[in-house]
Each structure stands twice: as C-alpha cells, then as structure tokens.
Amino acid sequence: MTIVRRRVGLGLFLGLLAFAITGQITGLISSGDIISPILCDGFFLALLSAHGYKASRRVTLTEEAIEVTDWFSTRTLRRADIRARRLQHGNRGSWRHVLIPADPREPPLKFPWDIETDADLTKWLRPIPRLEPT
Image (cartoon, rainbow, N blue to C red):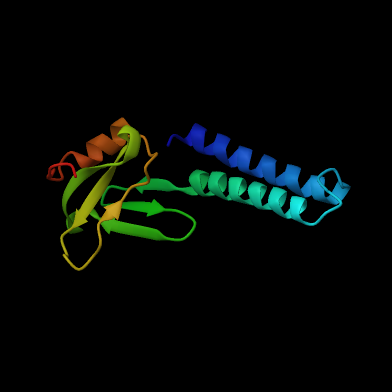
C-alpha cells in the first residue's frame, strides 16, 4: 500500500468517525426505537475499524532488517535471520510476500495482502533465496 493510499484510508476512517460522533451528538443519527441506532452504530463501527486497520498496516525496511506493523503487533526480522522467501496466493488473484525465518520454531513473517511492491522492496528482497509460491 502506498503512503498516499494509506493516508487516504486513514483520512476516510477519521472522517467517518467524526461524522458518526457528530451525528450522535447532534441527534442527526437517531431513531425512536433502540435497534436501529444499535445496528447503525455497529455498521459504522465495523466500517471504521476495517478502514482504520487497513490504513495502519505498514512495512518498514532498514539495511539489516524488515518490520511489519499493524494495530495488534509489530514484528521485526533481521536479514541474517531469514532463510528464504516465497509468494503466497490468496483469493481473486491476490498474493503477498512471506519471509521464512532461519529458526524453524519461529512463524513466517507475512506481509499484509495490500502492500504494493516498489523498487526498494524488490531490491531488498532480491538476495534472499526464493521458494515456489504456495
């Protein structure tokens, strides 16, 4: 995901959150019965959470390590600790990079599905041996 798309997603998340809060405070989003506001708020909360989570994920490269961050975790893997890499195919033609650690007890480091591969990431990954896609 490019920085522009991430900022647009984060802006959309914050805008919808402000709209939902303002609607509740001013009474624009309200109803006489209790179910309708609960469903409306639940829908907006789910939508906001999805956009906020998607906008918060990122991959950070340094000379010697790579870091994948989201709301719930931050994981760093040094280049010296990477045994191999592969592409993992998903639904509807999507794919993501997966880094296999040298220590078999550690789980693979999986990139977010929507991270776009740029020249810097390609250059960083090139020296790492590549396995067949799964």
